[in-house]
Image (cartoon, rainbow, N blue to C red; front, side, top):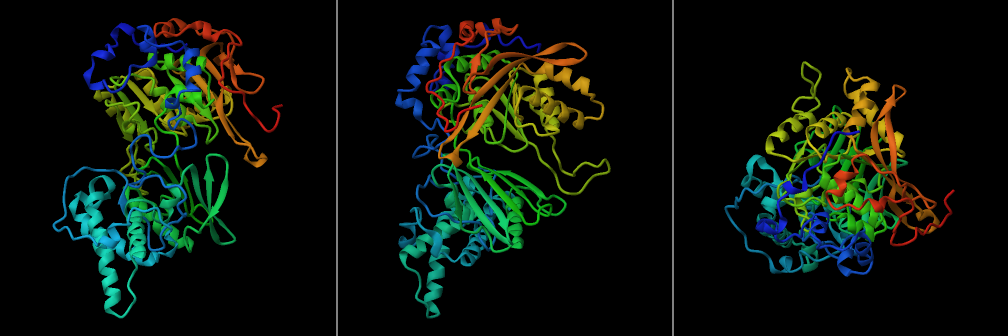
Amino acid sequence: MAAHNGTDPADVPALDTLALFAGRPAAPAARRLAGHIPSARDRAASATTSPETHRTTGLERTSGDTNGHATNGHSTTKGATPGFVPAGGPPTGGWRPREDGASPTTEPAADPDVAGQADASVDLSDVDWDVVADLRTLVSERIKGTGEGGTISLASHGALAEPVILDEVSKLGRRDLSIGGVGHTPQQKAHLAKAVRDSIFGMGRLQPTLELEGVSNVETRWWRGQPITWVEYADGRLEQGPAAAGSAAEMIRDLQLLASQAGRNFSPNSPLLNLTLENGSRLAATAWRTPAPVLTIRNHLFDDVDLWDLVAKNMLDAGMASFLEALSLAGKNVVFYGIPGSAKTTCARAFLNALPPEIAIGVIESEFELRLEELAKHPHPRVVPMEARLGSGELDSFGNRMGAITMTELLIQILRHNIQRIVVGEVRGPEIAAMLDAMVASMGSVSTVHATSPMGAVQRLATCATKASLNTTTETAYRTIAQSIDVIVHLQYIDEGHLGGRRHRFIAEIDALTLGETEACFTAFLPIYQKGSDGRATPTGNLPSWINDLEAYGFDPDLLRKGNSSWVAPLELKRARR
């Protein structure tokens, strides 16, 4: 059994007295202690009828950004024509915003024809992307001296770049007329300005696609020597888009320039590229180890949500929401597992959003993904996010990548920042060392891992642990996992798009981990929720030994009574489960 007793409720300051956090209500379980919140079933019932609970709560994005944030500098565009990576090169925008307050030496007057239409949702198919590449270079050269290191970011250069973009587009039109050309129409100027803006601060021709409503993934693959772009939507639709580049060499050049803006190296010595874009999308690219470069962008549609939003989306029921909420407040260590696309990160973010805003959270990730510092509905003003750095392709005398900053090093540093919760993001390999250290050094840690069963999740973590350290035996790994992790949660993912159905994501199992009593079993599982007849989790009646810790935060153990499910809607599958 994990040795985590949780925080005494008496130690948590009364939220109503904290003026700094007055804009956000107290955490539900904390309000329940004071008698200011309905029961779990009441909340579940209201979640299905109250318009407020449907604000960007599903895997389909509603119209507009509920966080008040633009996507890579642009508002969400429905019906825009997809476009792809510029032939002349990738975006030169920096992907780590800086507020340097610098300003350009001159501020050119804007062409009214360009300025009036620059932000319109337009079809950019008439744009010459070779011209866009030239204009991007000119604009970048004019504004890059306003920040340190020449890095160009939307946060520090967006407003500065706009008049420069409009000026360069206008100059181009005048040059064309001076040599006997026909110039540009106001619409062509507007299209060109948007394309330049997208190339500097977005993903170039790919940017309009990322802004389409409901896009979850954009992929570039190669078939018979030609690039094919696939656009996948949250509702399961799969559509083909225009080619991302004219050749493999062109795409590699684009990705190399994009990597350099993020301080990364993409070369034969470092053939794997992983980045988090400004809008929170996750980019992964591989070259040299594949016949042609491969690019995938995971567009996170599910941002500022809590557990009760997920109840409304039928991903869990009210009893589970109360259980997970109490786990979060009591400081239990939780691992969410499932296959890719099963909403593990979404559930981890919702789990953390159960915490009151005054809790200091440290987040360590290989790539920024949780992005708690950007949430508006559930603010975390004391969060400290840190990102590991892979380093260059060169190795030092010890065989380590030069310039690398490991998650273990970040863990040591983050402990010096008065942190109450330490979160280690996705565990795919050596991150396991930081995850286990975080669970020992703090309380309420959260991680995610790819697996399909409770034993599979533990085996995956144990394998990562033994590979990460030659001194870790299999027995030690299993024992450490059992002593460190309190609960593991299985996210099930069923895609019935090929049957004319939809995608279903829901919690299928929840197990408490304990130390095995025999040498043959180092890790024991106590099923708290197990799969019901339709595959969704239902209570088993089992109570963990630390149930009193949850009761201290207002949790009613009766919610774990066997068969006590309260899903808001049936699971509508096209095929019967076997």
